[in-house]
Image (cartoon, rainbow, N blue to C red; front, side, top):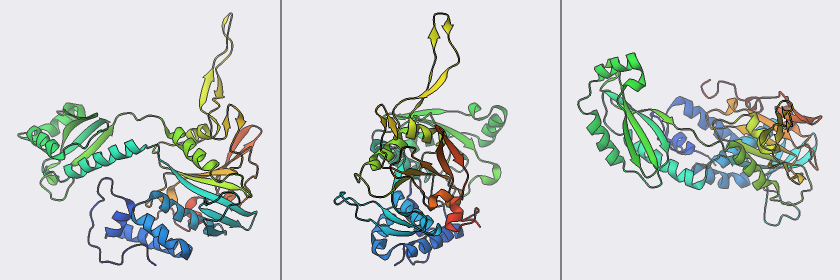
Length: 387
């Protein structure tokens, strides 16, 4: 069974805005994406035959979680483990974790995969509406200029790309790219004209970016250039915490160690977000006495972490959380990973994942330890898929 279609591919252009990874990989003729297809086909051939049809169906509708599961499966094989799909769990009824991993080092353990996106269903709908507009604007004939956009908010209803093109056409009419080029050299982007446009909660400030003389009039060049977004809410740690909590007690009391693997897709995740998601939000307290402030601020954690709340440690059946940061089909060897051990785990993690980077509890602190990069476990060079 093959994952991708066996067809002649001719399209060498970029992906559409919001286009899913499988859709683009399946139609792109560019050599770099052919190498990605070849790699994923090999991984898919290693996946248990009884699960290939279901996994393929999910991947073909651009299910990011299915790609994550395929990557985890191949990584576990690369670490020397064997994997059983959707095992029965005593007392869990019809619920089945993604994997039962047979570890030569410490025996079997369960693994469950989940994504952390920080995006609600409403956010996803708004993003799709915006992507539709970007794709429509990229079909706009604009031979002398790129179109810059400063963006705030999101549209609650579908905007009219036709109305936007009409608006831009009226603004661009009569502009001289050489004059605006000189103005931009002297005063930067702020020296260019800016045109506000609003639709149902979405505010766009358009501006023209002059093309160089050699780039003007070329066909097949997308006009949408720079897009600058306003500040987004800091919900990365909340999304990670929510993803862990969703899976932590799903299977009841477990008879083996249990690891939750989380692909964090937020662009701005760091170790601080992950530690706050696990142990609680950082907050600083200041002691004030009769003579004023008594000592420097002290960092404390709110009791709102996945592993610690007001009642003390919780979700102790979770042995560890395996965090993967921003894993996509095109950056696999560069995606950073870390295994965060639960200090209060009923069944500590002692498996082959300890070869990867870890966060290990020691004397009330988490000690970060280097380990094997994801690319090494998968047998991929750091420059893949380019090299």
